[in-house]
Length: 117
Image: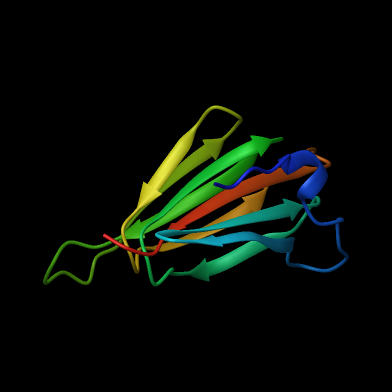
């Protein structure tokens, strides 16, 4: 069993371009990670080695996914405004980025990395 009060367990905000991050749990089949974004912070284009679900539990975040069809060099961009109550699932190695929304002072992102099938 795992329990967390995300608002209390989230890391303190940090200075710089990247958000603060804390791994809350390493569990059978999942890693639970929380990010705290301050204005102007982002996670630049990256991938995850496992499927993930992503939820904004406080504030607002812009989540961008880049995809290309098999055999194609063209890239499609899909942008989502994450707010509390919205969730995104990505397969392993899908290219994406996360940006703090202008005017949002404090945003929390909950990432669940699904480490087994």
